[in-house]
Length: 555
Image (tube, rainbow, N blue to C red; front, side, top):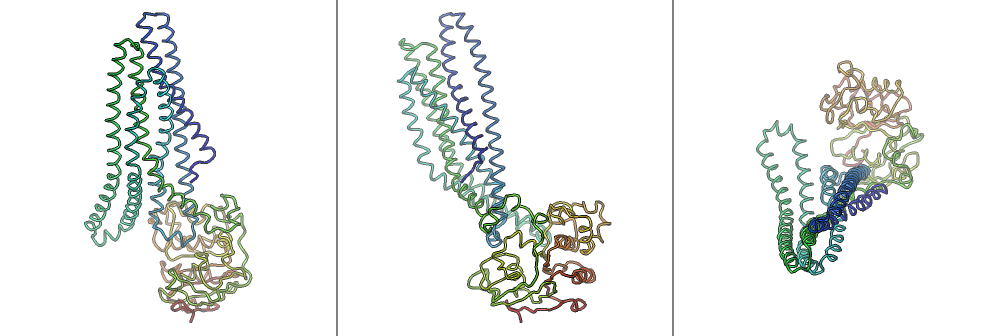
């Protein structure tokens, strides 16, 4: 997976380079300490004074390099986390409807929030740490060999023992980390489900029942994490014991060498200091290496999410700039022309291969005409609308707009051709104006016309902030009728040649619904397909044709 952009890769190498310099400078403190002790032992005042100024310069350089390394590292973490979340979100939001709904939205949320955090904490930070520790280890090894080959050989023996532990635990650690990630996604999904069901929990007094289920999955999730943490604890405890033992051995050996006159007091201090410097990077490498390898399944999962963005796009979409793909085509792309007819020929479709919802359906919608599609729940009306708006290309038969197959029409163009007013209205947690315009700018006359014809203009005077009233999460600050009127305005302002109303006025009273639908049905050159369970008899004269649907067929 390409985790870094070009700029991020430059930051990575900058952080690694600065970290290596910082580590090397940290190791060379032992040489300075050796020189200070030796000149002090020989009572060399001039040498001692010179070393004092050298030490000041050394500390200043070390501080500057340390700051630059930390700054590059933090900047890298910020950029990679931000870009990774953007790529995951873009990949998820651009999935085809069939593919998107194949997973729980909480799984996507867990990937964007939890998995990216795991990548940051268990991959990026350990990767920077390991690169720095590797340089520190190699520099320390060189200085140790220069000061005492014997001490170096003994430390290398301990090093081999210390690396055996993570080698034995690595695969098991990866499995447990993967299991924890899966359980965390499940925990996020169920918690989201419980929070969304607040009204049912309140209305049916389900506090104990839901709390018990939440406590159980919370326990399972924390147990999975604890299971992975136990292996880390075993790894860390062995590392600590071996590191402490090696330091004790080196102290005694170095002390013996000094007593026999083979090394100086300064060399003794340098060896003792270097033994700790030698073991520390090894311990950190042991602790962080399993973390890095354990993130591999998570990175593969995130890669699958980021790559899905191309699955439903045609060549034309892929060649388009990113900004074009992320926004509604209006006004950069003019509304598509609908001149002749929309034709469904022998269309058969099912969500499962052996259970078709539509059976050899044939339908013709002529431009500028008004149609009603009646039928009971489950007869396939909404499924037909999904296919008309590009839900899935996996159907038998053909669906064409003015002779062009729907599968050949790119998504931005299809969106500029058809608007849908859904029964279940979703509103973003922002104000009414943005929920209608969806980030686009429209002339005042177009906005006012949409407000009037949808009925939004009727309740705006009752709101303190009018169009700038915050609707709350999914429109919780508004009534069902107000939400549906906003959905109608949202569809009308786009000025598409085809409008589909999928029970789009069911949440408003009969008279208001009649008033809204009458205004829509009297608009010239607008093609309307209205889906309903029950036809208002007063509206029947406005329709050019009324279709009845049953068991996936027109009858």
